[in-house]
Amino acid sequence: MKKLFFVCTLLFTLFAWAQDPQVIEGKVLNSNDDAPLENVNIVNLNSVRGSTTDVEGEFKIRASVNDTLFFSYLGFKSIRIRVTNDWLKFGDIKVKMTELGIALEEVVIKPVQLTGYVEIDAKLIPVYDDYRYRISGIGSGYEGGDTSPGAVSKVLSAIFNPADFLYNVFGKRPKQMQKLRKMKEDDEIRNLLQSKYDRETLMVLLQLEKVDVDEILNRCNYSKNFITTANDLQILDAISDCYEEYKVLNRGKE
Image (cartoon, rainbow, N blue to C red):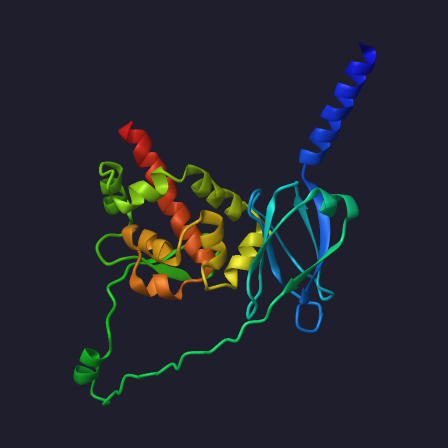
């Protein structure tokens, strides 16, 4: 009986140890020439923790068995890797990323041609009716939509309409939406998103398409200018604020 108890205790301890997050290490290389890649962004999609590679391409991040790590780097194909027992057991592994060809679209700049006459130039200069706000942690402000200072009106309508887009995204994806707060609390992820504009990390974490991200912002009353020019950290804060508002209104409804 004592032997059985000892074996069960040992197995339980080993199982619990295997489930606890551990610091794992690895190195990210260019698959073309095995050169180390610096500043590769790594996000644990399960625990929503972030990390980056150093000048030697090396990184450390806390993870458990079966956690999925998301690697992204400008100009390279993003990849996902699942943490295995072997990784935890043997330690350092090498992750190779494939370089992509990037074609930049032509940008046409059309400056406003001023005449020098105030009466005429005042009519030529575009006027934007978007409201100006400020997101915590961001030096500059962002522009909201031109119908109201906040997203209350549209979010409120979503609460009472099961067919509404926001109702389906916010109401039926609680686990994904809960990651918003974790993302905001992780400094590595905030630093990562502040320099990104592709929405890729947000899409992977929230399990949404880019068109869905844009639609959330549109339904939450953010302007087209903000949707197209904001960095991913600003987008994160905007969606998070809208979701928190949704939860408050939803509790009021219940």
